[in-house]
Length: 221
Length: 179
Image (cartoon, rainbow over all chains, first blue to last red; front, side, top):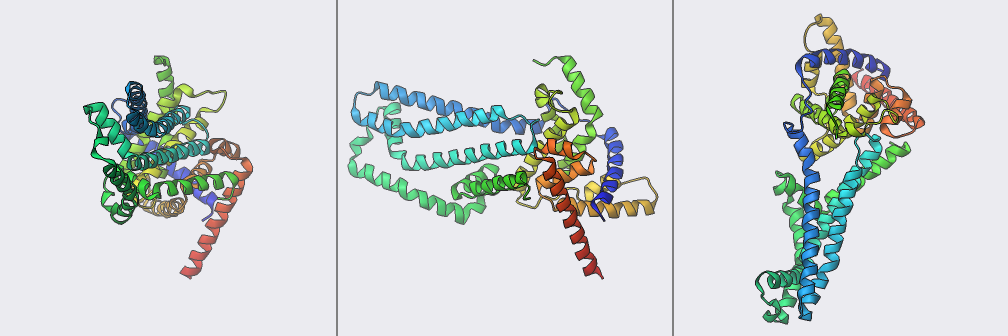
């Protein structure tokens, strides 16, 4: 059967479909009652939440630095600064991309924007995971000082070095665990997202989809 | 802020072109339940995007196809990720719903056969080529298909030719195997 014959079958089918659905299905546009619409807004709310938390974190870090008179605490906070700025900048970039999304634009353009947004989100989570492992010692120093007034430097240099080494070793260990036991997290969407991100699978898939979009635009696919 | 006249206008337009929503949803969903969910998702997004619809930039149907396809492709991508299975719309349940009751048995059998072939063909296409074929089956002009997808008319023609050739080759293979 040729594609044009399929077109005829399609026309017959859709004629029946119209008649059936006109009597059976009512399309709702009420946002409050629509569970699907809520799920679509979840990503947007999550990005806003992250941006607010990251912005607040940056502000608190600035306040901490301003109030410190001991250089060792200022140094710990300054080590965290570039990471905090990078994560906040990514949140702002995601919000900007989200604001520019108009589903009424051409399909290829919107799909590319959605894929770019997804790649940025994946990279940001990777960055957060990496920073939280590499920088957990200065983070602990700053948090303990800010919240309880505790000085973790008093535990000694060997403690600090051992913890930095632990954080560094944790990166490949986490990667290996995610690769070996990642399937155990497949039931939850968040767990799957995290495992895909740690192993780099999510980013690799996003790159493949981006390349497919480019090929489609060029007429290769 | 959009007032009531806007909503009334939107509802009139949606009622008039609701077939687009169901056809796009039917082409990307996995089951009848999924199709209904997707249709609601598309309708909700249409309403949310309606404020940015500009009739000087695009016809209402062109805009509607864009929104519907964008939602459906994103839905199919996330559904594929969560189910970790192949995208397989227009399944037997869809076809039963569509081709279901009424006509003489022979007509129904013939139609079912053609619909099954159509189903099998559409199911093997990726999300973007599925959009292209859907618009072609909907008898849209190359210019409108290009406008909806954001590619050139030449590209539309090239891709459709390629798809037709692929379909022919596939059927020749099947006939050879059957004989």
